Amino acid sequence: MTPAPPIADRILVVDDEPEIVALVAYHLAKAGYRVSTAASGQDALDMARRERPALIVLDLMLPGMSGFDVLEQVRSDDHTRNVAVLMLTARREEPDRIRGLSLGADDYLTKPFSPAELVLRVAAILRRAGTASSSLSSSADQLAIGPLRIDRAAMSVAVDDHEVELTPTEFKLLLTLVERRGRVQGRGHLLETVWEAAPDIQTRTVDMHIQRLRTKLGVAGDMIETVRGFGYRLRAAAPRGG
Image 1: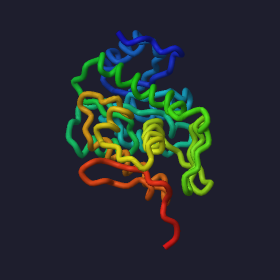
Image 2: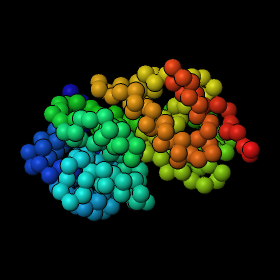
Image 3: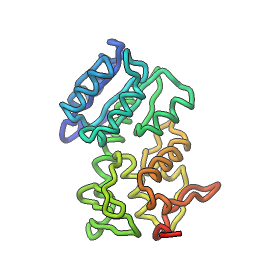
């Protein structure tokens, strides 16, 4: 049985199928979360801005505005860009999964689904958000590596003094690489450490998050090296100039 969260995080469930909404809301509430619901993309965006949920469970096939459109707007809005997103959809095709992850989804679960697994995945995502800032030693609140600056306590990242907005999963992924900089991190190890190895998460998930993280970090993204056949490594500093 999943223990109730110590502080009741708010979860926004977005789906136009009432029976799915009822099922998800019931199990999340039973696990101790506060739950809000929305049946359309626009309603979801309005509620996300107003309530600032910890996480959104988001269907892809919504009336008027697709889940992809909702996710894109969530990530581009200053008020919601740091909200975690779990995509819950009947669309199983890899291009849909890749697109969702590329747009910044933290996880992707397909229908039909196990309510117990959904609750576990929600808990795992929120743990990443809550523990990312505590995964370094207390003496390393402020990290400086080349142009990259990380404030562990504030969970903030800057490159050349310009703040970079990361999702909780991206922040945990970056911290994992920073903690072990200079050492190759296999995709399987990253899945276990960052995603807690949910059953059907694929190594492609790591690749898409690394790609998005590199893009967001700009010049500092060059610090993340691909080690072919193994995984990724953060080197000491990004090359400057030339």
